[in-house]
Image (cartoon, rainbow, N blue to C red; front, side, top):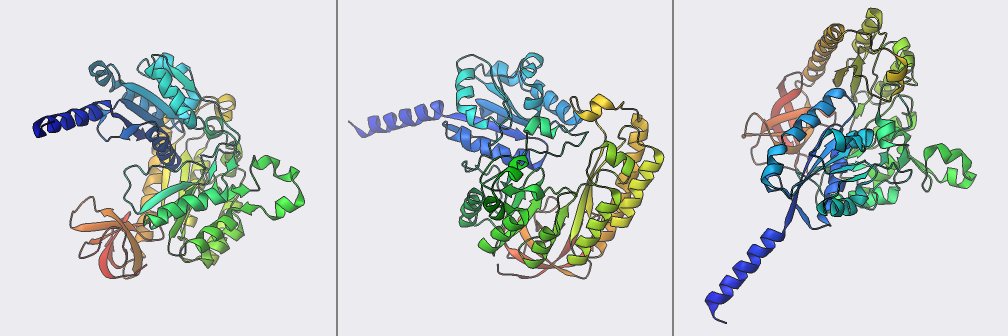
Length: 478
């Protein structure tokens, strides 16, 4: 065979491989858990011969990992789906799938309401994706939204999507047993179950070997993590005394991770007030590589509203927990979730929320108007009777007060040195790096000779309510 023919054949083979290669595109909405789940999905789909793409026009399979926590989140997804109509007209082989909480909530109804959708997959059914994709490629719609009592995806090594190569999420629990009256999560993600600590350590070890510098341990409620060999948490009391003694709770897991990876920065989210123990706070104080930040949703400062929300903690208990955290870890930052305009919330209830905020002075927070979610206890038992105008005004007052408190907290850093892990280039200037200190506050400073993944001591010179601005002193050489 002559050289020219060999070259042509190689080009032909290369072109054939290029044509046969399938690509998937995935978008995530909502909480950090959804973004972590998308990395599990990416791993499973990649094993089916699909390559990841960031270009919608190149995709043979588009997946939206959805959120149902508020109606606005669902409307965002529906609007996004409408935008795919043109793509489908141009590519008859394109398949569109909806994953996550919205898929679980609507199930087969999704296929009826959104004709563009080919497959619907709930949070516990991602391992069935190979079968479901095969079905849609054969011309049939496919649905699997069966909730599991034991699936944790502990045996799946996630593909880090759009990773900075420095920070990563590691899921440690799935589901939730708390049954807050406003929340759809127990219905869309199922009962609470914890992941085998060995699989958690193995996943983190892989990340460390790839030179990742920080992990965030994730769960709907990390403080209720409990491993005693598998199974639902509600069954824990039924097992033998020996297994109870050898069980691993969240404080033990934190200790295990901190000691196994002493040079790795560790975060966790989300905590619930009724489940956070003194042991967790003491463990945080003992290990320097566990970041001093706790996301501690309160939702309301009124006991009447908290009771209606089925939050399982009172205002006084919450404030006592805050006091304990600050006594043990004085420089611990605390962030919040607050919902305003819950059914029957009075002006006095609202003022109690503002008063609680004044007492805590959160570093930052996530604040929302109440959004009725179908199927929840609140939707069934309470009339959504706080007007949109009142909700809007109350939310603005909460946001304004949080802005004031955030500004107070960031100003306290001026003149102090903080340790920053460089994560990316600053959004506002390509001459600056951006990272976070251990309190989870964003810090920007001039690039100089530093690089992504470096730990750097930064002297804070000025600030906004959300960002610290400073000068690098020297790397901490971690």
